[in-house]
Length: 246
Image: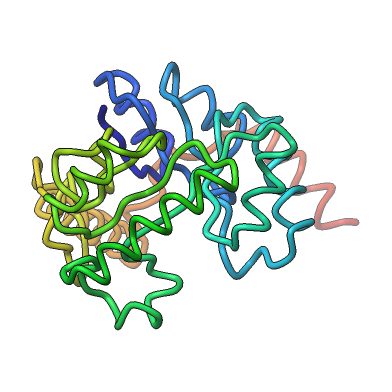
């Protein structure tokens, strides 16, 4: 399957038109308009770790996401919270491998599972999510051979972010796919378009248009007669007569 993280209505519409299977959309951006734009895509609504803290916070946010039409929620909180969401019948996706919000525990932003012990820890995390009631997990930056063996033995739907082809879905960020990423781009990201150059061209056009507008105002070229409301001479003279005597 294919999966994209999208942030705009246009990205969601494009993904739906392209036949992308799954979308990830964070809760603050998840609206009825986004649900409509996403079309037939299966949508995972990301519940923001750190902004939500207690299990009750997550439950309220998850129910709100589902009411809008979310098909499942992403939760990076502890297993107790994952289990509480699953107990309420809310399909929940966890996270294993490199978890950005918890990367202190795995030595920073780097691959997880490159040693036998670390790989077994990933497997144990997968089993713990299964036991908690999750149906899937984001599977991030794990060696492909390790990921394939885990995927063969797990009931979870595993969403690969740099974990190779053996998982159930390949997951990229739309900004990476479109070539508009600023700053670090992960190893597994692949660019399929050059939006950055197009954005630069459009920005240059914006600056030129705004500069011309400013120059025309400065030289009284704008507004012209065609941009202004007119009044007949007779009505204007009558107005002035009353205005000056008021």
